[in-house]
Length: 78
Length: 147
View 1 (spheres, rainbow over the protein chains, first blue to last red):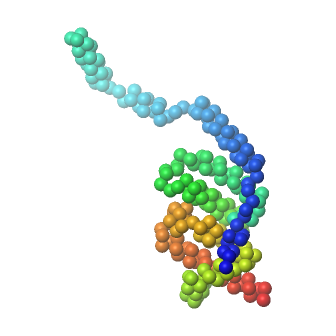
View 2: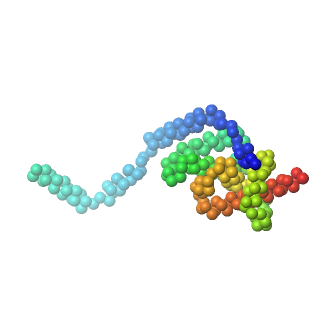
View 3: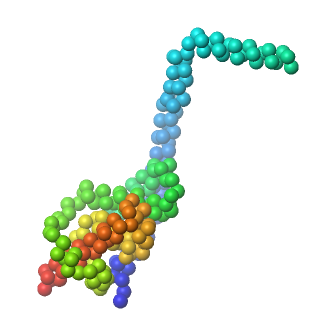
């Protein structure tokens, strides 16, 4: 007994133009995404940096300066 | 699945775009073909639900489920003529149609169907059982209507 599900299985192939249509749409989409990336700010980079500047205290500045000075002393010793 | 070549082409186009946009979500757990199947089937089911008014007769199938075993339903369904089977599938709701096509047309394993529908093994088996029971009920109705 033949499986009737196999008998009703479509055997025709998708048309050739379908592949071209899909690729054209994908290329257009890539172009739009690139244009958006070009004109949009990447907040994942800019927000942590601005937060760092915003909450920076004079104590942090002194700490950074001390580190820099220590580094210079080490260089002189060498 | 949608019974129209032009519509199938339009849907394929949209599905490929969706696949392209979702590529970064592919985690490699399932095979790529299963993942592709999942996107395609969900897309088609959503489309059919939105655009096709399906008159599903709300009946209590519990009697039919109890009166026939799963093997009997399977035998009955597989003994259908191609023309009758097409009519039966048209009357089923898209998820039932899809699961039957996956099992009996594409010969997909229960494991693959589980991944496509994101369901447990028992849930897939239950859906298959119900889909077969509904299909056999529709077959009985078609036979009765055509004398």
